Amino acid sequence: MNLRSVCLILLVVLVWGINFVIISVGVKEIPPFFMAGLRFVFVAFPLVFFLPKPAIPYRWLVAYGLTISFGQFACLFYALYIGMPSGQASLVLQSQVFVTALLGVIIYQDKLTLLQGFGGLLALTGIGLLLYGVLDTDISILGYLFTFAAACSWGVGNLCNRTISTRYEGTSMMQLVVWGALVPIIPFFSISYLLEDHQQIIYAVSHPTWVAILSLAYLILAASLFGYTVWGMLISKHGTANVVPFALLVPVVGLLSGWVFLDETLNITQAVGCAVVIMGLCIYSFHQKLRMALIRSR
Image (cartoon, rainbow, N blue to C red; front, side, top):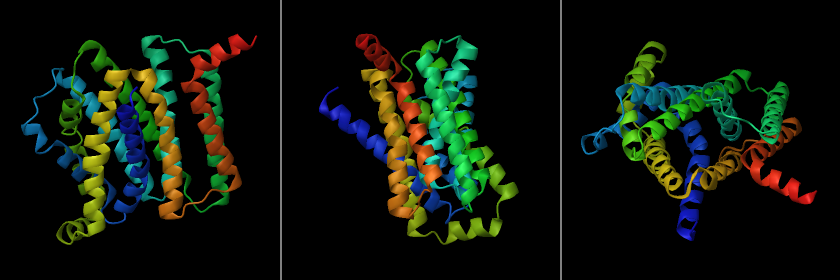
């Protein structure tokens, strides 16, 4: 990859890593489901009037929107709203890698190597340590469960994305992001109407703060439109194997930004858990290179 592509990848990683802090701050100003609904309204409009619908059946567009856009962010926004630390959320969410792999084995009969299996078990052990470390804090374990649910929804969405890219080659990522954003709008606002404080919503809309406005702008322009579009473009240009491993830096940025901006700290058990999860992710992502290194060392 040339320097420009590497810089773009690192910029996306930075944007996505800080994204968790932005959500944590934003849901203190706007109820989480209403905020998520607003996010996707402005991701879809007005661009949906200028970009043609991707040339895929509606059922796959709906499947993509319900998993990648609705399920993932409904669970993530709520987890951060009830106190899930932003840095740890960025890490636990990366378990989508293993959810995707497991579903690939079940649905597509993919094969996993021993190193991939070991990396997955190691990361699962790290998540277990994170959960055990919660016992020494006042953080609700419910936040971790919702974050893992978000990872599961992302994993299912990855398989939808894989099917779309395989069956309908040349699908524009920008078109998919924008048109897929139409799907979760009604579910988000419906849940918000049923579960969230109407007076708080009215006040947030009628008295918007700069924090709320900038948080939404960041989520819409940087995290969604810029992040997903550039990431998909770079994958199509340089291949999954060259781009996806950079996603390992997202939880690193997330943990650092949570510490810098929100003063989030880890106890010893949680710190070890984070290290173990990152190690498991590295083993899983670089299993082919590790295997070749082991063969050469014999």
